[in-house]
Amino acid sequence: MDIGKELKDTLKYIVLGLVLAIVINFTLGMALGAERPMMAVVSRSMEPTLNVGDLVVIKGVSIDEVKVGDIIVYYNPLSRILVVHRVIDIQEDDGRILLYTKGDNNATNPLPDQNPENPIAPPISEELLRGKVILVIPKVGLVKVWFTELVGKYGFTKVALLVLAIFMLIGMAENYLKRRLS
Image (cartoon, rainbow, N blue to C red):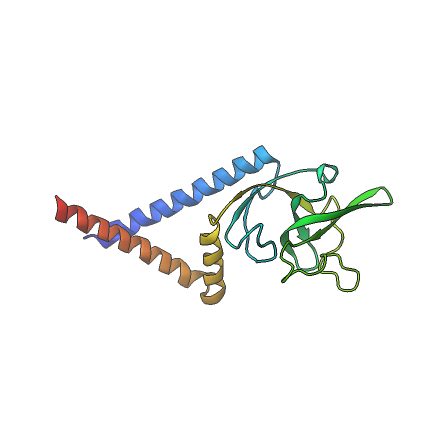
């Protein structure tokens, strides 16, 4: 059992996987007109419609294509994050279209995001709109959510080494089984 070869093979497949993910993301982004065409849902704010770990596919749209009831992705400058919420109202102010949003989960989001007493986001203008959710793939984003949580808890280097060790062990076990069965 050659650990050096196993490490080299494991790193080769990890790099290949990362390159493939980047190419798919870039190609999908170009096709859908979205800077970030896929996102994993990371909070419970849209339950039961979207659950933590669901992967959403986003199409870039102009603000005048959005309707009440659409689920959109917008940049929230107050919290500096991307938010996936439903449009509950559309208003016009000085010729500008503004979207008002809310999460579907009334337990975590009882009020609109732009609640006048305590807003968690400004009204969504064209500049803040990132796109509209066009497809939901349940649970596919769980790996990303778990990885992000682990990195937040233990740091990137420890998690990367753990993932590398797991892949190496799988490869060594596979080689061992191949030799035993042949």
